[in-house]
Image (tube, rainbow, N blue to C red):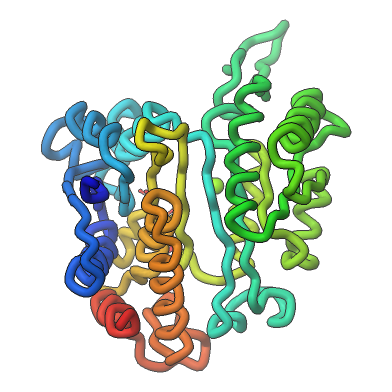
Length: 365
Ligand code: NAI
Ligand code: MG
């Protein structure tokens, strides 16, 4: 069988810095586990604009469609703020998501015990937390028509439309149920069926897909506002949460902060299965290009490393290896190794980006 293929788009700011640590881990898999990835590297975001006048060259887009998985660092930076909207660094990322049709966004919120004190919640509420929010990513109110600012009579009116088709709901529901089968067989679907027709349809379709195709998975429904409360009150009651684009945006950000630093959060965006059965996939840390610390060796590479672990699990069927990477991160944190963003008020001496990468590498052995 062909080697698994990976397109690396390190991007801007701290993107290349954190990606350098992932490349060490990819090298480790080649040397120690005999797993060789066919890695191609290319540009996205501001660096692509600097070279090609566009944040994502057509050739890069074509490559992204061919590989088993794309791993992205981060895009953007203040030097690009003056650019026209159509060529802003973010547009490169949006084009990838759109043309690869990545409709299912997986955002894990996982609390490493060593960092439980970091949460704004009580330690017992977050210690051992391990949930995933599945956010619909390509439809809903961020895309629905009509949209715009119009004039009605003598005042302006701003309009956005929440719109979901049955098939759009069904495919993201399937993605959540598939994920649940790999985990603890439990899904909670969130909408506002009490006040939104799109929410009524959401609830119906999720239930139908469940009854027909995934009756073995335990399914519950919750209004998204109640879900927000429950996430803060007792997040461990959840395992997989599936929700629409807007609610998922808010709930995943809130859930993420239960566990501490932005430098720790990975994500996956998945689409339809390709000919080889693997889903179209883009993996990236949740954080941005962090221009305030770029070039200083301060960035925490863990979010990017955990994004690679998600690629191992969801694109390459290497779940045990993904767990091994996660355990290595856990061990390093338990040993007290901290980048600056993970330092508590008691202080201490932070390690650099590459020292953190090396510590994780050592823990992998
Ligand atoms: P940001 O995520 O880049 O940074 C927010 C804060 O968190 C900063 O203080 C930063 O130093 C810190 N931080 C982020 N990642 C870290 C890491 N790995 N280790 C340690 N500290 C970390 O968000 P911000 O400042 O709003 O945006 C900066 C640039 O990034 C902008 O150009 C923005 O458009 C872009 N951006 C790109 C994203 C992406 O590529 N997916 C997502 C969010 C923002
Ligand atoms: Mg958001």
